[in-house]
Length: 177
Image (tube, rainbow, N blue to C red; front, side):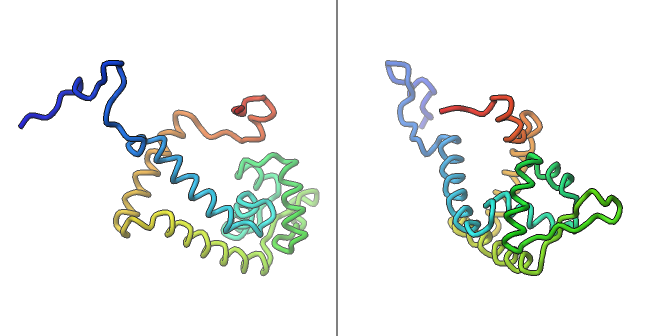
């Protein structure tokens, strides 16, 4: 039995027959991203600044005290936005600004015990989100999926690096609807 030729799937109007939306990479990426984004936003809703607040808290905890400006640069957060974000995180008792012994004008960002406790809970919630989103895959498939997705993401980022959204907004380069 011979396999159909590519022409057999082309309609008389030039369109492709028999291709479902589920076979489209863009559709699949969009559906998975939308589900993950909704679930992770719900998991992070009590953190001031949402995902950005979580990133600040996680980085301050994992890497130790960092200067406010260095943290903003690392996370690609505009300096002004970082100031307001840290104000909110500090008001919630999740981080502290401490004087930098090497430069009295600078402040080091330190996770508080309350911040570390919340971070542990948030990490559990995010793992549950990942488990829910990738629930149709077994452990081996999840590992392969992550590895392949990271490789594709690194290649895509090398071609078209992710820019700071604040910088894009300043230059009017954010996409419009």
